[in-house]
Length: 110
Length: 123
Image (cartoon, rainbow over all chains, first blue to last red; front, side):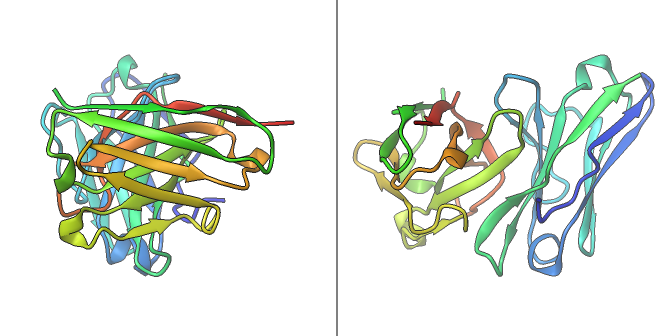
């Protein structure tokens, strides 16, 4: 069981918005940065968001990140069929001295 | 072009050892922390270990599940990171990815990933 908690799945129609939550503790999400990754089946994870809300070069602004207290959220607007993938949050945990990942959320475009 | 290539995976019996290598190019290896992340078949991402740059002390940290059995190291002169895995267990079966953070000073936010190397622990 992951220390960072994500919903197993979320879904929405094309063009709509989805949000994925990531719940943790003060020792990880609240006191450290959150990152988000996208992974298609059989491929390597891709960094979407770092430092809670920053996008690496080349990541479209349809993807956004936010954080409040011990929770973080990934938002995807203008949902496309090509966004169907697994999404993971990650954060350093100061107590454990480990990087923690959430269990992953599968996004389905209806 | 920034590249990370893992090697050394394979089939190994429980209790045995394996050493993974992560060869890199296209960036100043000595400036960055290097990490290993694994993914068991059909499962999510699991962080394994990190070795920091010498500028940040060259220290390492490990996931609780591998602490005391795995050892991470780096060879800055050849731009290679290693993961020595001892006392392997069936639950260590996974694809092992070598990764690099997006920021020099940080231990997370992995922007650069290799294609991964398969490790299967089975008798």
